[in-house]
Every structure is written in structure tokens, then in C-alpha cells.
Image (tube, rainbow, N blue to C red; front, side, top):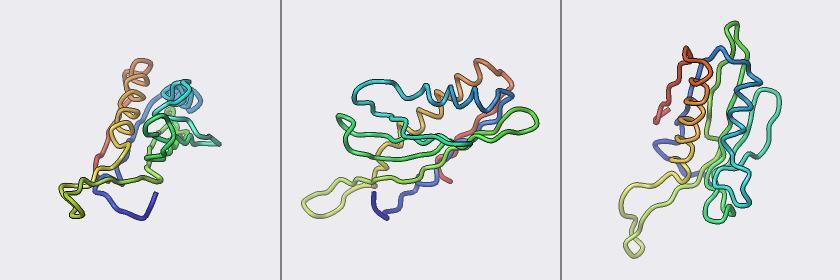
Length: 135
């Protein structure tokens, strides 16, 4: 994961809910399936955060690492997602770059937030979620 830049590198999700931070953490953790070679992998967690990685074929190559920040509020909790590290890829014709760079793992990152938002909304219909593709 180098120092390359990408137009979606600051993409983030924001969610407000009346659910407890503990419950939202459970729902977020549940997004990472317990399979031998998951594409989405739970890496670690601590007070107020969970860290995930998006893996390539066979779960070996780390394409992206992102964090889910969960903080208590007067009404429940607030959730923010941030990309911490990422890898880009670009098609080439011979040795000449062709087309836009792809942010590897971006689709899975976006789908993670969409699934989490749906599960939170199922338990708290008053929750609000937004995803900004360009931060």
C-alpha cells in the first residue's frame, strides 16, 4: 500500500442512530463473514473503533484497510468510516497507462456501509446514513 492518490481515497460513510454503540459494533462486526478466505476481514477493534480489511483473491492480498469509528451521543451513537490505507491499479497498453486508476476494494467498502446502514435502519427506522464517494 503505497503513497498513490485516488479521487475516492477520502470516501466516507456517516450514520446517526438511536442504537447503542455496542449494538452498532455488533452489527458492523457481523458484516465480516467467518469464512476461511474472506474478502472482507475484521482485523481488530478497540474502544470506539473496529478495523477491517478488504482482501483480494484467496484472502491473501490486502487491497484496502478502513476503520469504523463509533462514538456515543446524547441520542444514541454516531458512526463514521474512513479509509486508512489502499492500493490502486491501472490498465496499461504496453508500458503506457490507459484509463483511470481503480481503487481496489472500494466497491466492497461501499457495500459494507450500505449493508450496515440497512441493518441499523431495520432496528432504528429513524437512523440517518450518508455515503460520500469523494471526501
